[in-house]
Picture: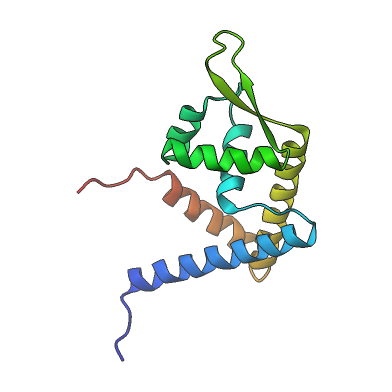
Length: 148
């Protein structure tokens, strides 16, 4: 048996950690009665970051998916009462997507589940280790991608 390369091992560990956080978050959401897919969660978070309700095409670009995928996500979120489609006040042909009160409550549940999952996963670390880990993750997240 060969020993994995350090970078390969690190990549595998990061993937495993991400999966653990995701599973823990999903368990918390399910126990709170919140049924939502990861893609729908991502769309809600994207909506919450917008100053004004975006167009479907804007959401597709922001999420880096095809417009049809956003339509499917919005359909499911709208059926659950988490978002609504609304005509643009300046151009009635343009449809915008906005959060509802239920959508905002879902976002609060998502944030709490994510925070609790992270707390659970990070509990073996000391406060200093958490700070160091956070700084390292920030460095990686903020790094400019290398072009080949």
